[in-house]
Amino acid sequence: MKTPIFHRLETLSENESIDFLMPGHKKKRAALEWNKLLPEFDTTETYDTDNLHDPTDVIGQSMDEVARVYGARRSLFVVNGSSGALHIAMAALTSPGDRVLIQRNSHISVYNAAILNRLKLSYLHPIYDEENHIIGGITPQHFQQQLDQNPDVVAVVLLHPSFYGVCSDLEQLIEMAHERGIFVIVDEAHGPHMHFSDELPKSAIAYGADLIIHSTHKTLPALTQTAMLHVGSDRVDMQRLQTMSRMFQTTSPSYIFMVSIEAAVAYIDHPEGRERLHDLIESIKWLERELADLPYIQVFPRMGGGSYQDRDFTKLMLGIEGMRGTQLRELLHRRYHIEMEYGDYHWAIGVCSLMNDREDFEELARALKELAAEFGKSEELFVTVPHIEPIAIKDITDAFYSGHERINLMDSIGRISASYLTPYPPGIPQLVPGELITLSHLELVRMLQAKGIPIIGLFGEEHDEIHVIK
Image: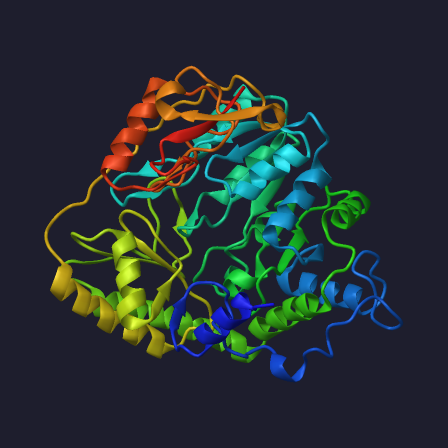
């Protein structure tokens, strides 16, 4: 048979690129010389290799070491990414029918976990920062209001940091939840590096969150699909957590993935790794100074403000006046072989790691200067996405398992959505399964499409169809 995946990856591997995207190893062999270890390390549970689902030997020792490094009460390895870790965490702290309060801009895996565990959802709506065109944080006032309106909440899921690096006042939010006996799960998938620098936001582990998820491959030199689940309090039933870990993970966990997690944490905890993280931070500061006050170039500031207390500034946010972020990302890719993680209407977003060298930032600065000189113009691409208050008619789980049909968006007013409707920016779902579709949603879609803003959740060649409940 033909092998199109292999040949495509082989071709791409021959092209040199500067990566401001995941995975965090940036194609560099820092933690381990993988070419010398494969396939010998691809083993299974046998004599002397221990078992992830009943760790009593080297796997248990390795997880204990990771917990010690992060200051956690316990750490688990997860070999199906932070998505799997979120499924485990939500199952471990809830029972079917429980209500969970989540940030509306949570990753899709949180919604999927709610469906898998048959949970009821209520939402925390982050404030949209209209000045900077990004999703902000959760204010303590809004958090208090939602806790009061949902006295049956069992657990809360918070983001720290968000995809844009935004960090709310997590310490206060956790304290408010714990005062009511509510569990706190923190999706810190984008922040496994933060613990290792005083210049970055503190990890949720330091604030006593009950369960914390780290996506090891995002910002550490680990292989894609690796994650960690940390226990940050003494309120977690460890036996139930282990049971759910067995339930939501494969019975054939990859030893290569486990070694990758172990090696990545060992590397960043080593003086060499900590020095590289320090150099990364200094390179980001250099980039800010280099681009400061240059015509048309926009660099999102390192510190937060407004609804967010802090920001993980290793999430680069770059813009050029008169150019959409999606266009900037594409030009960086095509002309300079500089790969950014994502582009929205205003920003091109890069995910940095300790494996990015100063030379990467120098090339990025050069490219931005050239693009700004060629394409920059004093044109404000301003767009505000209004918030539509959701009207929940059906529980998200019931809606998911109900019969669906696909109809034209024009005919969907008054029907119940069976899918998500998510514009970028700001990346907050305007509809989730079980909510009423209104004229406001139709008007919003028309406005966003006229401005060229992509919307996830529409179907058909003209992107004018939506899934609804029969």
